[in-house]
Image (cartoon, rainbow over all chains, first blue to last red):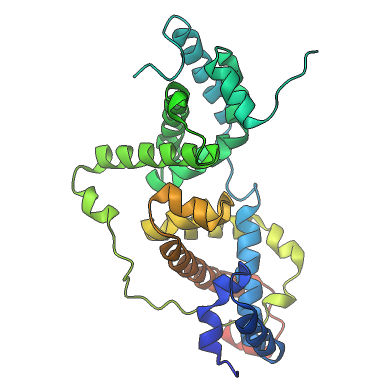
Length: 89
Length: 208
């Protein structure tokens, strides 16, 4: 089947996630071969996802982990005088 | 050195049996995820950190109620989401409740922005700090329901089913929201790239 661009865009997210069925996948690939616009949209969307998953894009506050474990340490200390974990409300 | 039980179920069993300190090890791989989940909901770094601490403490206190029928990460994400929603309600009052039910029927144009020269942008461009900042800002600007799905799925890299379970929505809804979120971000970032990428073609040269 000959897909138009709009049809490709509608499935671009599922195409990236590889959840489109085999036939549609083939049609999309066929379209991408000759459509520069859709290819660029696909690449740009993919690149955004790569950038999103890169740990440097969304950084944790400095000292976050240290503060978290200190708080947890205090809580664990406190709970040692209580019934086993999970039973406290 | 004794033989350390490194698998999660084993760790959980030992914690529940009294080796409480092991909770530090159990939670370590998920610290980032808990913070990002909170940030996606409360959108404020200080609130997100406080909420993340609360969520982790809550997971510690209620570990015995974790049944193991879901993944530990999903169970923990659910706690983080609940913590975030609680904070949001507290901060904004009951009025927020209705917003949480924000419909998916955003009348919007969910078509991507065309560009023709992204592939010519060198890989190093992705290393640019400004691009990361633009992406962070764009994610923060997404409507809540889209941002939450996007963060769980594409930032924390949970799968569709896990994302659905943690947010209490069905997988189909996750897919629709994810698609829209990605397209909105693509649209947001394209103009940014156009203004910072070297113009190589007449078309963009003229547009600039």
